[in-house]
Picture (spheres, rainbow, N blue to C red):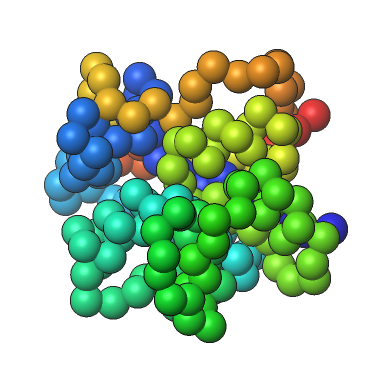
Length: 176
């Protein structure tokens, strides 16, 4: 069975975007500091991405408007907007939990939950996330879009790996 992984960055106080929804604070403490490429290793293990409309819109209009950066994967964008799907980008109005459960049963590599917070909360509440790969950014935002909202239950985790570079800390947890 395929695994579902959350691979995301958050501020030290637990936000994935600031008050305006911006992520321009996603950087280490030094502009010329060394950053590690943890994404490339992670990307080798997946072939499917799930994201919400706001994440998709931010990628295509702000972060990478000239090129779809996830062209090596099949991406499911959860939205109620009517859009035409392509071979690599599939727009769907399925509930995130139903979609994740269906995709887990299919053959293939693992599944990446790219965002947003609402999708993450729904999957956490159903205990569907197998691996939490979280990069903590050395910034306190004070408010914004919180990564983890109120949960339905405790989910015990086991730390597999922790690594720091340029003020950022990568944490990888799996369910116990």
